[in-house]
Image (cartoon, rainbow, N blue to C red):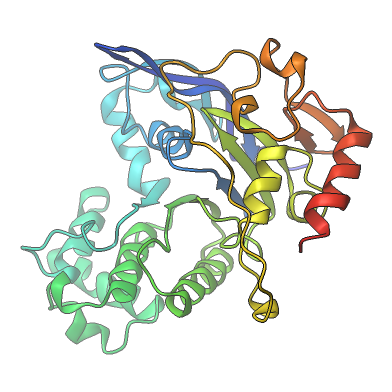
Length: 338
């Protein structure tokens, strides 16, 4: 069996504030093999982005209290000096940031920004870096890449800016690509194009990919494994079939129930939102953090923190319900609506 490319062990990221300690990430563990695609799903504030900004070294000990291990290609990234981490970032691990509208600098030509990323890590001339930038724009499907490289970001559409960000992230052929909400603010047609592009480039560059999103519908066809996060913890993890055809956690059921069905446009039933709001990460509820919003809550949920326990194989969930109850409720309530 292949060695994990990335292995995160009991990662905690807590931010001290005047109001108290913000437990943004609270004991997260997972692994990712070379060439795999992992989907990380949850509402805003669940700890998704903070987890992977910490992997990138963009959140460090000066900003937060960080514990645990982030093992990448045999090295614990949390122990690397700043200069060594800077070499890893971009060359070994790249990130596509959340907003394609603001991720590119408005004052510099798009090709120059990609070329600069190349020259930071490679000893090449400006001309060679520019040629590589044009080639990357071509590979991500931007027409007339030689002309587009000399244009500014405001001359690009949202989808083209996202493609340019992907070109920059892949310009150094990294082993791991983290895509943080890669389809935010894009229409559904462009969303599909961007996700299909990531699939194609994964094969072309042989990279592992993490897709961070709030929408289970986005990762339905594009991820090998999915982990669902809530209040800084992983509450369910499994392969794609486990999550979509046999989810075990009430929060995952709520996310699945909130996905509109395009093949049932005539239905008059409303979508079923998850009641309530995510908790404050300063004052996380006792017991199961999801219990104030859970329709299946019982006494133990209010007092005992559930463990992330496997049901079969790699499928695990953090819930006090029995396995038989989870399977029954999923069939009766989730599958019946889908």
